[in-house]
Image 1: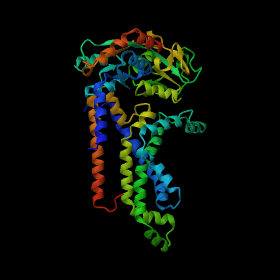
Image 2: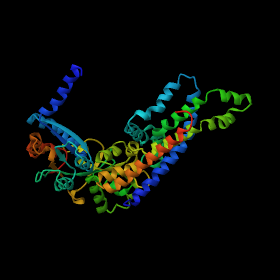
Image 3: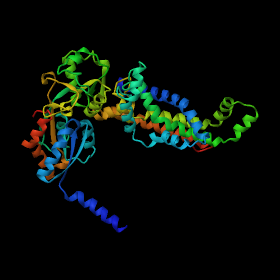
Image 4: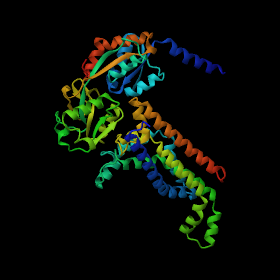
Length: 247
Length: 226
């Protein structure tokens, strides 16, 4: 083997073994706040963060099949509970890191006037929601529609994104005039990033409790423990709240 | 068998999408392949490269561009809206359009190779017998290129059945309209319904194997690799 190759392999292999690194699976709706939290955490603790963003159901399947995650920040509370029950997660490590808020959003300014008027008027071709079976925000959206008595009226107009990110994409590109997404995707520091919205009153849907859980693989990883602590701390809480989550 | 009505709808829809796409592709792909096989134009290479693009691009690239261009603010979407057709995202028509792009090389390349293998001699012979261009195409080229047509049809059909990324990006997961088998498998895996996922995924695997086996067995006795 050429000497350079040996050197390269040595660097690659030892590099990952020495540093305290934590691999986190992060629910898609938590992408924006997590990207804000990551550098703050790395600076405060000196540990390195590697994050994968995706749908919680998909992470469940991957974790069950040996995915290299130390920590799961789920979009719901049932998946972490299930992983714990099935022995894939460390017992009693679960905690709620955020409670999500649902928003009806349109990319067009002025389309929504802070109320459900446009939704009730029904003058749209497509209403985007996340797949209610796979995504908690999609489930919440169907609860809202049911409470408002609009389940049937919107039946033929609903289009589903596979994740909350894809749902956002349908609306952002104008393919759906409006849709239900996570508040954190369109909102920061009390302001909408773009478009128009109706922040859905929390009485219209079951609370979206998002739980974190320490996975078996991260049981003895100091960086994973540090991240769990950090998420409960004041600095992370401030960032999480800025994106419209409650705690 | 633990398949739901949605699963059966997805299977039917997938077959419908693949059949329609294959038919349209043979109509569109044959003149393109013929031109590519015969032309001496400098455009041959660039056009050939464009046709082959879906072979190397991630389907998400195609899906993303289709989502943006077919949407109400996109070029194609504005065109279809001004014609009173609305937009094609989240519709079966939209999936057909996406599939035409996605499977185009699987029609054009086998046909082009078959046409090139025929050479000029049979056509020149037909011309000396006073056959017109259409006549010689249908009585000489089509029979000689038959294996190419079969390969093109089978591969286009099978490749469209296996389409996932494009449908995911522009489909919207609507049962009976855009929810094809590959997306349904993804749904089942995401919602932890592994039994149904296994049935559909196993079915796809068997289908793909049988198609390729039939193709290779049929080809073994025949001439011309493409």
